[in-house]
Image 1 (tube, rainbow, N blue to C red):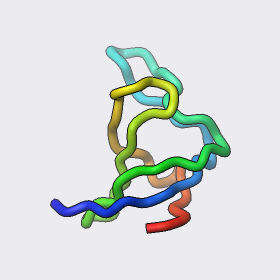
Image 2 (cartoon, rainbow, N blue to C red):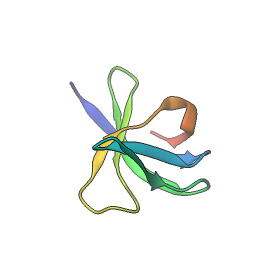
Image 3 (cartoon, rainbow, N blue to C red):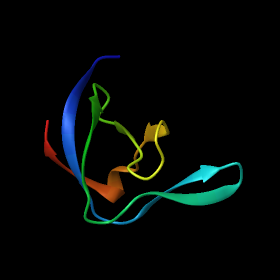
Length: 66
């Protein structure tokens, strides 16, 4: 799949599962850089934990630039 850089705003705190425990990985109100994939999904590296990246729930973000 092909991706393009994008900028998005986090509209609610985002949590990812880490070995059965939910951890906050993005804070509401942050403007972040990520990748917009050809299927419409967005992935990004956490602003809280270095080196941790995954897809984001589309209900948690608003894409500002793509």
